Length: 113
Length: 112
Image (tube, rainbow over all chains, first blue to last red; front, side):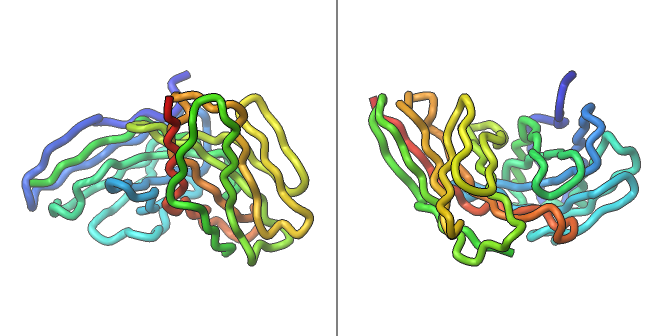
């Protein structure tokens, strides 16, 4: 039982490049989330999903897209990376309501040059 | 949505009890109070949740006064390994699907 896994763990991009971050969970959770965390800052929600095939915008969605084609996977895409997107990205999942415990992945450290 | 206010940072010596207070003056009747802990270079993890009075588990205690306008996370006899950021979240399970907001949390530094 791996919980929540994220791929890759580290990545360096040049401005304008694109990439996709993969989040996978094996707990059969309905809800999945993508957050970003900048130095000294708390977590800010980028996008979330309340079930397979659904996505919704969070606090800071601009510059990102997401897809939830399978219940266990939640993909975060950067179409044209910018230095302002340099951050640590965390994925999380939870059962089925906003008060349910969120289980977090180990994070992806992304640097955009 | 109930807004929460926490101290930005706190320092403590090893072996002391640490109390972190979260203010949520406009908490709604159905709102729960949840605390997460985030160690450096890791994702947050759930530590405790409560609705009223007192909740205790193997990690911490959560004290909620009768008016529920604040809550206090209590960590008994902290050690260096308790150095982390602690987040207070408030919300209910019925008001749609919008996730709870983490905010900036309280950075606890435990000193030897």
